[in-house]
Image (tube, rainbow, N blue to C red):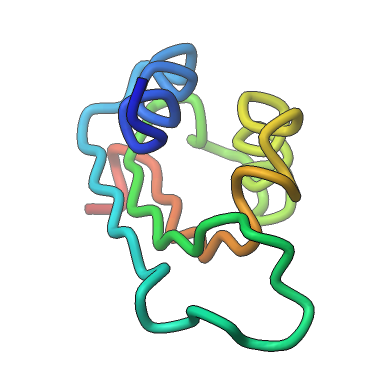
Length: 86
């Protein structure tokens, strides 16, 4: 399974109304400290984020993806918003 597909599948638990994942790995190839995992930018909108702080939103995402970090996902930039914020 392609990693972006796996990330997408895992994030379905948050019932996203919008989801976009950019693979930025090529921009970071060979930098110090990268043990081979990919770099991704995540844009996600979900009703699950309503009333939650930025930290809590990130925690929900990390709960869904935690076992992929740091070996498959080396870096993850998260842009998480609630449905009523878009």
